[in-house]
Amino acid sequence: MSSPQPDAIIRIKNLRLRTFIGIKEEEIANRQDIVVNVAIHYPADKARASEDINDALNYRTITKQIIQLVENNRFSLLEKLTQDVLDIACDHPWVSYAEVEIDKLHALRYADSVSMTMSWRR
Image 1 (cartoon, rainbow, N blue to C red):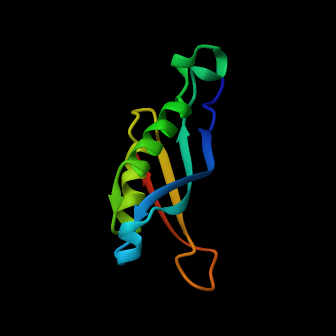
Image 2 (image 1 turned 180 degrees about the horizontal axis):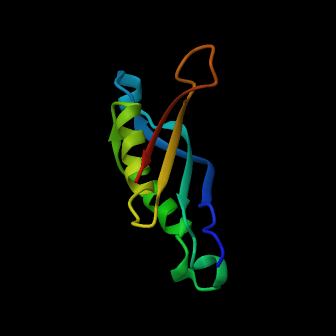
């Protein structure tokens, strides 16, 4: 009998989106560039031996949900945006761990970005 495999990890890398994020007048009036990175861990036991999409976690569906959330809403805080994306990432019952990092580009004068990272474990 074989021992259980470690979780498979889906990584959504550098998903570049635009949204309303911040509290300053300029931020409320104009969309800003953000970069979303997501890591989702799940066992993938069925998918390892299958060619059926129903046996795998569908990263396209998850990505579409993230895009819809980000582009159709306004956020004052990076923390709230990050938590809302994390809620999508860990929604499926197969997910054992999820981590989201969101970069708000050009948030500080001398920095490329400011980022917020949050994680969740079942």
